[in-house]
Length: 350
Image (tube, rainbow, N blue to C red):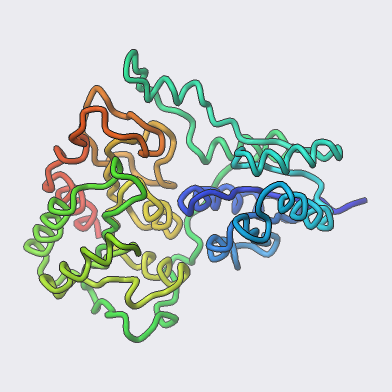
């Protein structure tokens, strides 16, 4: 009898892939005799390596090696050699749907995610909006496995032990916190304008936190042009700030550091989900998007979601749509004190 071997497909952005981790972990733990292979882009490997013995990771370069129909056919032939017994498509986009179709034609057991598109249109509609809680991505993923015959009770705390990741593995150049020193992470940017808290207001958050806790170490997460333009200025003005990507150059190291933070301040972005995977509380800031769309970080307290009520919110599931008002009031009208006060509540618990 062929050994059960489950293929899990999820390409997409880092945050979306990160949301699969709690569910895949619970699946592997509850079905230890089932081999699980996660197919994704190479950046996601640190999320799954060493997670559990029956979880393997397989990377696919869809932009070069497996580009277009010819590339996907080549990828399919490679997948056939793995002798899978079931296919879980957790993405359901053109590429994964094509692979799913090939497996269906060859009579494999296949299931794919339900994205609840009608409900998403209702919650983001500009008229007759229905602000209702949609199923979380975690539930949607678990439903796929249930349809394949693997019902799963999702229980997950962190990819690391209770003590967090090993700080000794981090480069010596990274400024370490001293014993008892509060550590806060801040990730102020995201892929779309509708999910970014204004820089001038976020700097006020930094200033207010440092005024309350002068000995606090603030680690600034993210890497890109906007970070390169902003973070060096903040670090020059506030010596307690550290631009993380100037010291750490891989995702695994960032996860180790995140696991030792008291709190992370993040947008509705990948860093919210990464911090969630290491059991760090997140104060998340929501503008064009909304926690009701199902993308809250794993095991995060909804009370730590900072947002203001506006009739137009949410206007988008992913935050990519231009602001209908033209002023991004959903972000600009959030007072820095709202964020600071919520961070204070979490720090006081520590």
